[in-house]
Length: 107
Length: 122
Image (cartoon, rainbow over the protein chains, first blue to last red):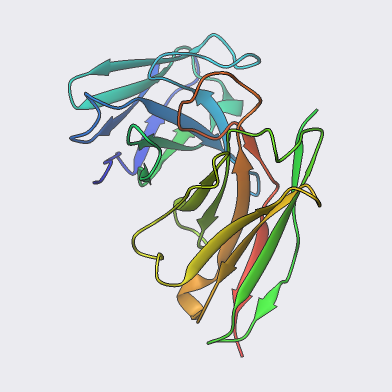
């Protein structure tokens, strides 16, 4: 299956950024979000649709509705400029998929 | 603190086998939930290659299944990736990845190596 993300999102500093991820399995399987800055490994920012790992700023949040999950960054900062990837997997971990990625530009 | 570090073969010739090892420190590979590999071609997105579970069960991306194998060596506290018959399309940064120790089995990676660029070229 596939997860579909917009290629790019642009926001001004202090404004909210919303990045969507759509896929048929999402109502039945959790989604996860990663942030990747140039030359660095991905970092998990949201797990199980809405949970935030320790150390991730509170401005990062996740939501889910039907076949779409959304990563929201409230009050975007310059340091949030990065690529963001959603990911999901089936119930026994036998099949994983990443979305194509969204480049977040802070204007 | 758990850390993952990929070995660095750098350059592999077309039709040969790409071999990578991920050295694990701060945690035992015999205790981990699962270990996996993800790759990223230059300028492109992430692609899951496969995962090996604590049970020994291995799952692969269907698009690579015929050429890939993943294994764990608990005596050396490392896990490995082999990709056979490589072509230029296999040129990518390869990441090893895993989970922090947890009693909950959800399918994501919260531990990543720094990644290593593997170039396929003659």
